[in-house]
Structure formats: structure tokens, C-alpha cells
Image (cartoon, rainbow, N blue to C red):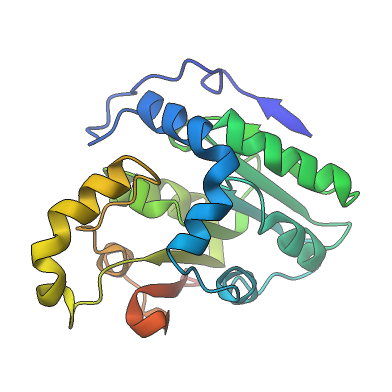
Amino acid sequence: MLEGTGTGSRAIGAVGIPLRLDPEQVRSRFDRIAGLYRFFELLFLVPAKLRPLSVEQLALQPGERAVSVGCGQGRSLPLMAKAVGPTGHVTGVDLSSGMLEHAYERILRKGIHNVAIIHADIRSYKASAPLDAVLFSFSLTTFGDPQAILQQLWEQLRPGGRLVVADAQLPPRTAFLLKPLLPLIRWFLERTVLGDPDMRPIEELRRLGPPVHVQRMRMGFYFIATVIKPES
């Protein structure tokens, strides 16, 4: 089901958190490229196994509750829904109604009934009960203040819950080689998928405290990072 919230209308403004990009800019950009998003994934050589492996890292069990932050076209939602089963529940949250239309069509086409799609600013999202798992799939690097977003979802995660980030970054060992190209890379990203090439998402995850397990792909350009919230 496609749901709206108070801040989930098409006119979503900033809510006081300093960002490099206003949420309205993010929404507008992804609305425009929604039909081309698959092309950009092919252009950037996104590994086909990245999404299935990231859902696998969530370690979802029947009956659990999970959220996909910046779910986009919802390509991870069927995998998550299958893992939690009919007694579980998955929520996909995204700013872009254009991207969410694809997600909505996907779950309708597959006959999935345990997924809710919410058009909202994730910073205003509050789960109705503690979450078992949270997935950021190519979304964390679009936030100008990633630590604030991580902390917000971390607080809603139950003890023992899992937080997984699937994203891209310039590999530290080769970043110096690409440094001359950074202005061009940033220019291109700012006009397409808005990822921040300067962000160090794995370091942001380490600031949460627990150990971070990292799987790298494509010579380290892509990664899946998993953090488990301590039981105590």
C-alpha cells in the first residue's frame, strides 16, 4: 500500500538539519531520473548480487519488522518481504514519488501483501514498534548529515537488531589516483544520482560503536556494511 504522512506530500521542505542538498532538491532530482535509474546502475557497474547479499545480511526471520530507507524503485522489498513471511512486515520509505510508483507497481505485480510504501522524509519517520532490521540501499550517501539519519534509525532498532548499508565509495587505497577526477565525478553525481564521493559511510557506521562487518566488491568501489545493535 502507498501511504502518505504529514511531511510526505510532494512539497517537502528542510526541517532544520544542515544539508548539502535540500530534501526538495533530492525529491525533484529522483522524480526526474526515476525512469532512467536502471540505466545508471548499468553505467556504474553496480554488482547484480549486491542487493540479494545486502538483504541476506539483514538476517531477517519470519515475523520480523524491517525498514528500507530510501527504498527507491523497491527492488529489495520483495526479497525482504519473502524473508519476514506473512507474519512479518516491511516498510519502504522514500522522498521521491516517481521512484515509489515503480516500487508500488512492483509489489502489486508480485502480489505482495506485507509491504507498506511510505512517501515521506525519513527524518520524520517513526516506526510504530521497535525494528528488527534497517536497510540503506544506495541512500546513505545522499544525506548531507548521515550521522543524524543513522542515529535516528539506530534508536528505533531493537537490541540485537541489524543495520545494513549497501553503497559505493572511492576505495581509500586508490582514492589518491582518482583525486584529479573528483571534480568531474562530483559534477556528474550532482546531476544524476546525488551520491557524495567524499563521504566515508563506513566511518560513519563505526561511530555507532559496535564492530562493522564489511564485504567489498568491484575492487572496493561497492560494499555491504553490517552493524548489530548490542543486546545490552
